[in-house]
Each structure stands twice: as structure tokens, then as C-alpha cells.
Amino acid sequence: MQAETENTAALMAGGGLVFPMFMAALGCDRVFEHHQAAIEAATKELSTWDEVRGIIIYGSVAHGFALENSDVDVKIVCTDDFFAAKEHMGNISYFDRGATQYEGGYVDGEFITPTHIEQIAADGSEPARFDFRDAIVTFDRLGGLEDLVRGAARYPVEQKRRKMIRFHAQFSAWKAYYYEALRRDNHYLAHLSALQFALYAGRLFLAYNETLFPGHKWFLQVLSGVAQKPAGLMRCLNTLVDQKRAEDVERLYNMVSGFTDWPRDPNQDRQFLWGVHKGRLEDFPFAAD
Image 1 (cartoon, rainbow, N blue to C red):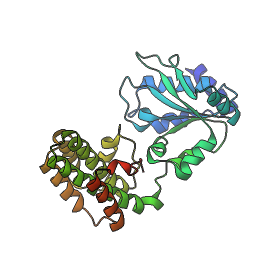
Image 2: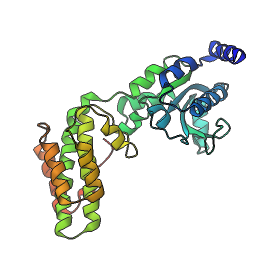
Image 3: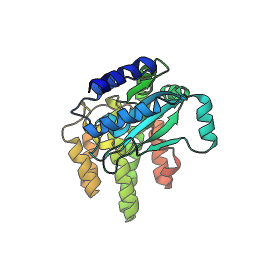
């Protein structure tokens, strides 16, 4: 144990390893020991590469969402020349089973540059930003990588009102589309509309709480953790997703509408409802933001 400690100290002194800080940040209650071991092994290996400028652990392990057999996700910050060469070869991904000692385990991720992180901080989508929320820097040869990560993970509060206007317009439009589907006995459209209606109901509350949309994989898990939402929201959402009944749609609509005076733009509302009337709601942009 003493030799291992001296080894780690020497590595830290020589190149920016930050294991003690990273271990404390993760916390034993959030991370399985075999994931910690895999992170340390991968960091020690990658930190020996001259082209590597930093290592960032993200994904389920960093967020505290990991299962016992989850993989470890890593963003490897590299030089511009190295990234350009990888991109030219058509492979900016990274995969390693050697760092993991548990069944089915592996480390995977992608190569990025500091410029990529800066671009996400400037105008990245919410899921792209969410990648950096809770992320842990385990190696930093750049200096200041922690600050870059924090900037990328920031909720763009200056866009909050615009987002809520947009989400409310879609929330209302998908409700109208749901009833159009029932009128036409279109089961496919009814299911799609109910799920989209649930999505934008949830996105309203994420925006209200200035919380990043993580993408669909962890959407309900992140939404369940926000502080300001109606009592029973998650139960209502889950029932709608499971049953997709008209009474579930109405219950959620009333719950969302009664929570606050949501900002709205009548012109945008009309635009989306026109799309419902014409059967072309999908033509409108439904990007993550």
C-alpha cells in the first residue's frame, strides 16, 4: 500500500493526476469499488500518452446512476493534431477492456479537444452539456480543465424563458395531436402524441428548475430529482406513459397548467397548432433545446 501511495504521488507530481481529489468527489456511496479501480487504471494508462491533455469521467458512473455492471465512460482531451488525425481515420472513439477487472466491464469514450468543450459551453445542446454535469477530471495537463468542464455543464439561464415558451407550445400542440389521433382512431399517432406530450411536460419543469435535459435515457430519473414540481407529477407521468388514456392526458395537463403562469407566445402557439391542423407537426424543429 505504501509503495502504491508513493507511486501515485510521483505520478501526480509529474503530470497532473488528481486521484485523491477525484476519489473524494465521487464518494464511496456513489461508486462501486471496481469502477474506481477501472478509472484509476485507465487514467494511469492514458496519462502516459504525450497527446493526452486531460481525462474526464462522465456518464452513469459520474452521475451516480451506474449499475454494478455498467461501463466507465471517459472523454479524453487531446491535442488538435492528434484529434485531426483520429478524425481523418474516421475513429475518434476509445475502447479498453484491460482497465476493468469485473465481468463484462470496459472503458469507452471519445477523444475531444479543449475547443470542443468551449463550443459546448458557448452554444451546446442540453444533452451535450449534461455530459459534463457531475463529470470528474482525473488528469489535467492543460491546467484549468475543471473550469472548462464547469462552464460546459452550466444551465443556460439566459435562454430559460425562451425554452419554456417553446416547450409550452409543443406541450399544447401534442395534446391537440393526441385528440386528433383519437378522432381518427390512429393508435400509432395516439401513442406518439402521448409520449411527446409527457416529454414536454417534463421539459417545462426541468427548465423551470434550471436543470439540463439529459436525453431520454435518464430523463425521468433527473426529473424526479428536481425540487420545484407538483406533488404526484412522477406518478402522473408514469401512468400516462404506461396507459396513454385520455383521462391521464387531462390529469397531466391540469397539473402542469395549474402549477404556474407559464410564459407563452401566442404566435408560436398558433404556429404549432396550425401544424396539428395540417398534420405536419413533425415538420417543426424538435431538437433537444
